[in-house]
Image 1 (tube, rainbow, N blue to C red):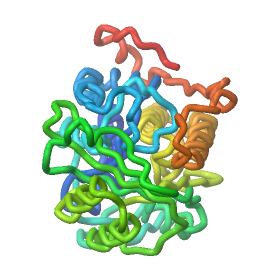
Image 2: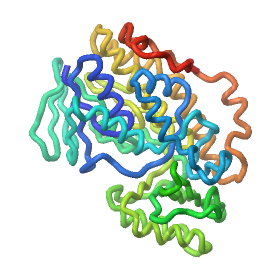
Image 3: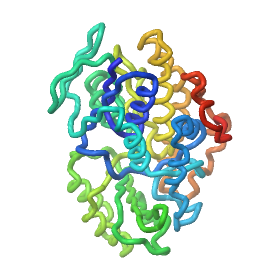
Image 4: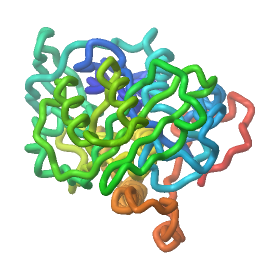
Length: 381
């Protein structure tokens, strides 16, 4: 099968990896002109690490763990609204997506700087037109194009029908200088505002996060200048440490500005089109589970397609395996966003929510594959 994957983030690149592994021919289209820079840090846990181990990438990801050189210490990881800590690993999303891109680019066609314009399904295939490229036909289309998914809008309906805003925005960007110890960790600026600096691995790089509470905002998501103006207005009048961060922000070329929001849908597929990652079931950065969920979802979706029986059966099995897992993570996302500015440890009060975690089953879709390398000793949780 020829499969169009919309989006070259963690979910899209991971799906391309597994599709290629199972003998499919994936094509990845990404609206950005190159692999995206910037983005949140995220925790990787349990089954997500097992997926990475099956990809023979676990050691490389472990080398990217932010905690290897975080000057803020193990309990001051407030650069992101992650609900449950500690994770087994913490990694920047663009580092993970970049690694997945590098290991797939030799065998997968990537089309940057383009996006789908229309989708027309038939009983046998999907005819896709693009903003720039020529029309093409694919057997299946997988939307992994994030919170603002065009695939979802074209097939299922408008953005507003499925996106649940959680009242929190974050600006995340790189710092040119090396932060001092006094700059590490979290600074509560005032009601509904917070700032943090995160040192990355060798201490030579750092990123800042500015968070603020707000209802849904209307803005051009491609206009970084507008994003910077919004953030600067929200933090006007704060003290010198925050003003230094704002000065850095104005010169940053990797600003990532996004809302904490969730995608809630009654179904994740329609005909020959399926959604995964944030496009179909985003749990919000406040959950700390987005990348893990994307890796696991990509593994299961590709594996179910590989078992045969048709795409309709595969899509139904993919959804059946992940529904409970996603529901738990979305609960964590809502809890994390609600408590983010309270100044208390985010894991406080989560005992009831996590007492009976929902586990997802990782089938061995390629018999013998997992046995080709020595086991890492990890078990699925």
